[in-house]
Length: 233
Ligand SMILES: [Zn+2]
Image (cartoon, rainbow, N blue to C red; front, side):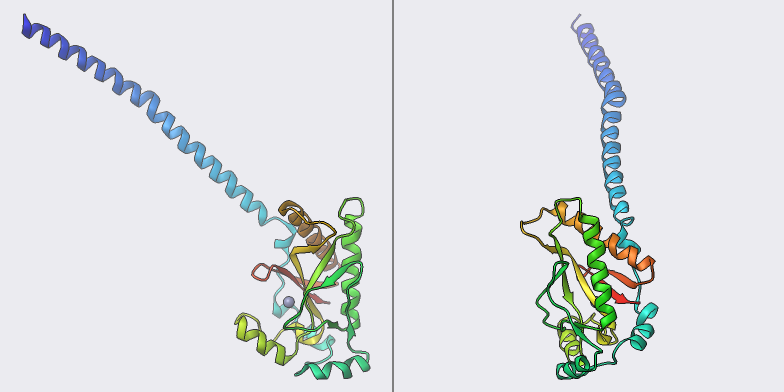
């Protein structure tokens, strides 16, 4: 009798284990896989977001030195070895000073000088006008962009290269035809959120892109230096 009871208990236990196994396979595993798939979807939507980053206007501007260096050299004011050579170029009308105005402010320039050829300064004004035009119906009307670099000399590039090996010797900055505009900081009456900075970066990129499309300039999106490198055409 006891053996029969044991057999029934074992049988019931096996039935119960079988039901648990079936439930595990039919419910728990698909649920787990479903979660994993959901995670994959989350990753792919994150990846999609990253892909979208490559579709922003900034990424469309990747001109390189070989596109513009010869033109820059021919339309620049030669190459200066030392800062003391700037004044004679100003006297000859080949360089003009750039100063803070309603469109932009100058960053502290440790490795360059706030001078450009007259036509390059005109380009800078056009960028400012285009940028402000795009912002006129927003609350960013008083925002100014920041110029982080302009004219360099052979001497200042040599100093810069001691700090940044990637700084190229043969740069359009030597010709007074080039400047850099920061995209991660703007001059504003009040502080900006990260989203606002991203918005202004895109508006700045659109302004540059329009002028580039009109063959006014070449532009390189410099992610390491957080700036747009702009060369007058
Ligand atoms: Zn530059």
